[in-house]
Length: 426
Ligand code: SF4
Ligand code: SF4
Ligand code: SF4
Image (cartoon, rainbow, N blue to C red; front, side):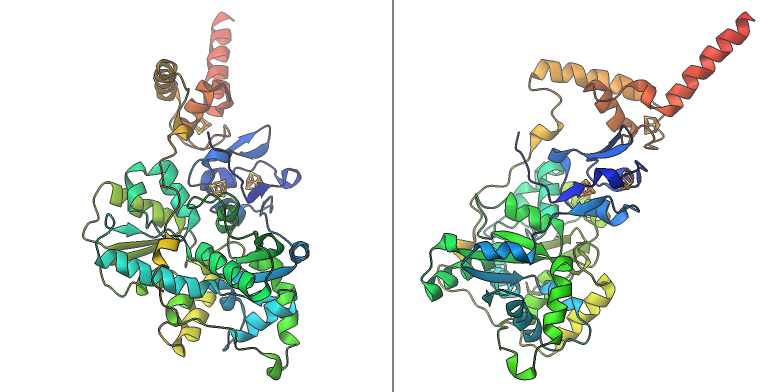
């Protein structure tokens, strides 16, 4: 079985076992045992829903600190376009990019530039009918991982192009090597991330063996220092660093990637529950006739990521305003660009996750036992036992990770029956 790095972590001391996260997790990756939440690593897609919902702030996302960039001789920040939406009254993204240099980066390369290349490459793939349609965007790693563990039929629909972060990191690294003459290992490329899923993707990528990024710093982590640096910039200090058009910057919000396809047979959905519904409908072929499907795990798109600081709806409006004065696109594919943007690995269904045993006979016996345990459970899906549903509880019992009396309703019935028997003997 694969091992995964996860950027979503539990701070055990702060957890009081309230079950809020248990009920919210879209992949049933959380259990409450001994009064504390536990994340089942192989099922977690790092969507960040449990961070959003926890009233005790017991879930957090891993992020590097600005200090961490100092290990490298030369550093390039690759900011997500969602970063621009965090600042009030911003009418020039160069202020943010110059601010990144002021906080310690030697250079910047906007992910929105790479997004424009991915948009052009996607248009080409659709036009040449090179892949199975509809293509499902590969930009949200939480969605890609969700497809990998829950929707085997849709793995071959995932756009076989690297996400803009990876494309940006590759180009930024190449340019930095050419500019400085340094070796690749002396150059640090850091993504400024709106969400934990992208932090995870850098550590354990789906699409490549090793990411060209060295790590990620959460937007919320860098925000205080960046704001301070931006406030201290003189007008004359602002460098003309941005080279993105409205297509690239539009990727920050739901529907932005689809708009960049410049065709009308598309669908864009955001928010993990809506995403799951669309994937189910696609798998059951209830939705047909589309060329492209854009799915973002966070409401509003990347501007809704849990590592951002601004309300996603305010952020969406800011992105719309910023796009108004930009040219359509400023980045175009060179001859061999598209070959450098293909996935190195094929996306395969992770069947191991739901296998009860490696021994097929044993697995089938366990499955039968699970069904019979499930029949006897109350089917209330209340989560009081520490498993998110009665079916998940039956699976946990079969695996020896829970016992029937963990179900308070079963326990209550057992106590009542003992009481009734005792009463009958008096
Ligand atoms: S929401 Fe989850 S992580 Fe937060 S306190 Fe409740 S059980 Fe613990
Ligand atoms: S990050 Fe998402 S998938 Fe992972 S445990 Fe939290 S809610 Fe579940
Ligand atoms: S009814 Fe029982 S088994 Fe089902 S979720 Fe609730 S406590 Fe768990």
